Length: 396
Image 1 (spheres, rainbow, N blue to C red):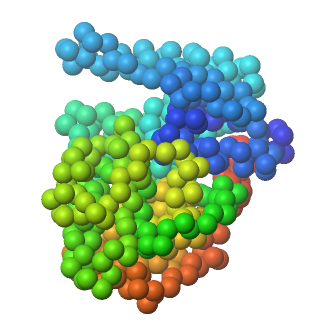
Image 2 (spheres, rainbow, N blue to C red; image 1 turned 90 degrees about the horizontal axis):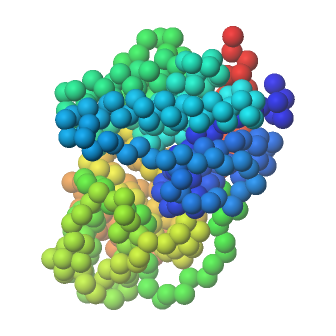
């Protein structure tokens, strides 16, 4: 099918200008779709604001549970009517724009649920996207009934998808092991992306070695091991005063790590070392990446963690050295290793501090594997996704 014949509805409920990981990702993806010949229709939450992009953008409300039904544990009834409302809105959009393929970009999973409904009721080809696992997500804790509900909905999405896109092989294996061979054949891997055009040339203005962590902390993904390593490092008077740690945007509203960071910094004796930088927009965060000497990514301490944060791919695009704090055999550890960078697990505090010491002294100079990095260029990932659009539309 020719590109101009593809009439795609993109369900991305987080979209620019609001600052969320999903909106940042779709904000990189859609302009490249347009450059490669795809002009989608977009459906997103009304609270995201007005996206300055030359495409049809439709707005929907977020789900708001009925207080009475919520009180008597019947929220599912409210959800049913909510999805029926979304389906009616979307059906009108599909008819108006003659949509022949739906692509949903979760999270939230509401977009995947709506996409599966459209496929089931209207027979329109549907590609679902799982940035993170849902039922198998180690960050999530479900009640018995909650687990059954999520498993039912995930199964509904998988069964009514023509393709299922995952970010990593680990996530694909974790999610799809529950499904039959026919469903497993739908799974594809297309990683997070970076856009080289987003990075401006900047001059480093500080004479100290700058470590930066950019983004929010979430529960078990927290700065404790990082603070322990820097506390150990401060004992070495040879490099005292020659480095700083910037925590950028750690106070974002959607963060689930609520410990008072100022108190934590004080407890570790890092008041003179750590700088807390307020939340900034995406473009500004890329400037911080470029002006830093070392960027830090932290995973929760889950064995064989399937998560590959989109932030670490943005880090890689900046060309700045990256250090990971992540379990062995995680998706992040594998990514950094193939890229040419180091990672340390949660038992390697001393090794991490020693590595930081060598970086500060200039004893180590890391260089990225550019051939590997190119797999994550938005041009490459978009071409892979368009191939899946073509294949799905040709499916009988």
